[in-house]
Length: 480
Image 1 (tube, rainbow, N blue to C red):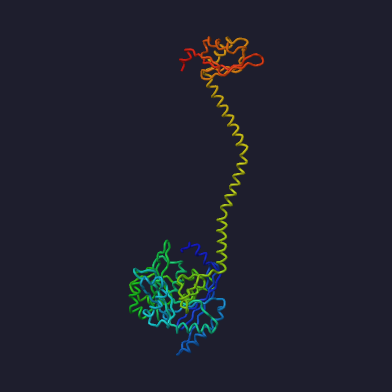
Image 2 (cartoon, helix red, strand yellow):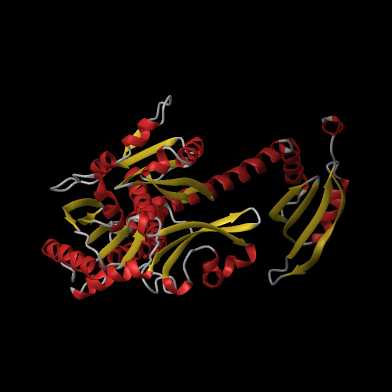
């Protein structure tokens, strides 16, 4: 899974200490480093000479004396120790295996390792870096160290109660140092340098991985100085330089660069890069401390290539353990996510209640507007009715005038309704049936008839309900 850059950076924040020990055949270079949240610094540097003597016993005694003199400069119980071996004491080989071996590289390499190393399987400690597919093959970078060399160092450390956390070579230590100082690479890079009578060249590249580019180790070569200057080393260097435009240098490389005539090479100094990135009370005084710094970066969780040549490291690789600070940050981040996720329903509820309060404030105004709207609707209906009746105002007056003329005095009208040329009468009279001939003889009414049965009351009067059609004059009928 690929995590965002800011999350990866936050996961590396911590308060840690680490010690790196660069072991060559004749010297020990020790650095003690510290991480304060994100800031890294070199706290102390020490170098000791290992006086070589004839025989394994004398060498162990010299190594023991050098280590004993370094003990006051770090606490083995609290400061994790990481060792870097010079490449002349170890082996780095590129291998290409069939694709079927991709899922079981460890087991396949266990059976095939003797084909690629000049040692038997039981004579070396080894580890590897997967390189991914290369055409129809699976690539990996194999690192190995003879047991007699590493056991000598481990036994000497064990005598002082020191158990290192990791062992690697300059190929990965310097690569981790370069990637830390530059913040990563986006194009091929070449690291050239060394000490003593040999020089080392390391090739790096950035391979795409989704939307990001991840660094990969391409090759590592170690040769004596004479082979670099006069032998096949020049051809190897020129071939690598064509593919790696960026060149980084450390240690004694001036003689080799001077031997490359007729070329203008821009070399970035790894020691200067480290001084820009690492602070502290003391700066690195010599480039031979760089491999030790690269090894110590593992204890500060800033290493990119996790190679470990310790016995058994191939079977049980180190897991990613959270420190107390990272655990606290993870808990805070988790709680923040929970609060952020749970705040949405709470915000929605608060917003709903605010809207309800606003609605309650607007309630009286809305009710007043609703009443005004109802009044307006009634007035519109009445206006519409009166507007409809204005056209028949003359007919109504004619009907009323005719009724007042022909209805006898002993008859009374209690209700009169006129609609669409039809007139309905309700009232009482001594004889309701006598009203029909009177109305029929009028020039205003026609088709007069009872609308309901007549009833005679105790006062000897009949209540009636009559219906008639109103005669329209020709002038009114012709009117549109």
